[in-house]
Image 1 (cartoon, rainbow, N blue to C red):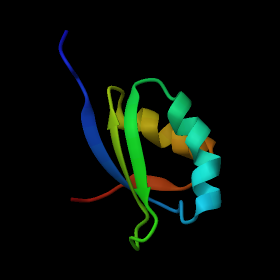
Image 2: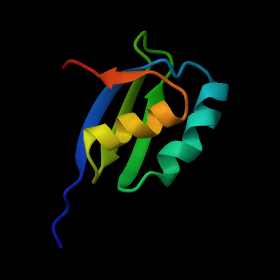
Image 3: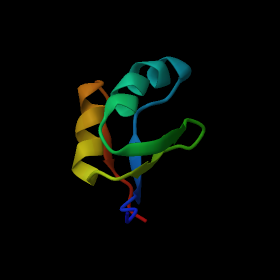
Image 4: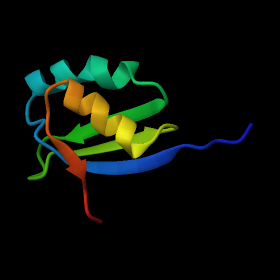
Length: 74
């Protein structure tokens, strides 16, 4: 079976442990997401994600949790 995992990075406003706690169930329950982490020490609060889903699915999951998110320009 072929692995279709893609990696994306996003600029977010997830900026503390409380924010991580709030967004965790949304990202953990989103279909296709393999792993994710947020660098809350980075000025852009970078969310790095490995997913079998689309970039748009990740954006929707984070927005459902109440956070801002946009693709990070490489």
